[in-house]
Image (cartoon, rainbow, N blue to C red; front, side):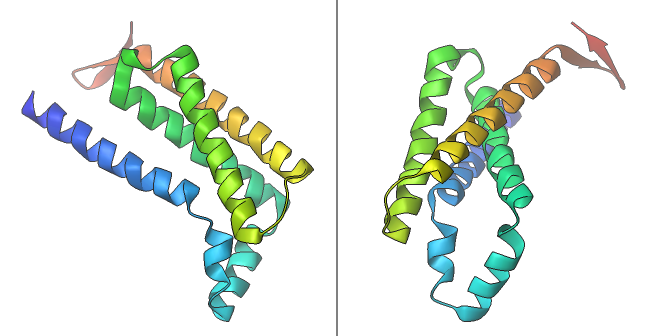
Length: 139
């Protein structure tokens, strides 16, 4: 049981770092260094990368929250946390860019929610499987 407790602590710490990564406006931070800013724009400017990153960030967030809190974090509580993080992320990005919200932020919120749905579906699929010996058995 000690290993599980240590693993939960480790996942909790990783999730806290993940949240910091989601909330920290990376584009804003890249402005202080021209080379970093050019690289950042080159990598993250394509729309498909932007969409994939937002969806992946929130899928992993939901997977981590579900695993860490198991049955204590479901439904409205889970969605409340996801939406709080999504709105905080968009707000910090707007603040860093010193501009007002627009359709781009609304689109990002939809992509974030879609990523969260993917995370929930993956977690439910994984939850339905149990490892017995070297093979998986469906519950």
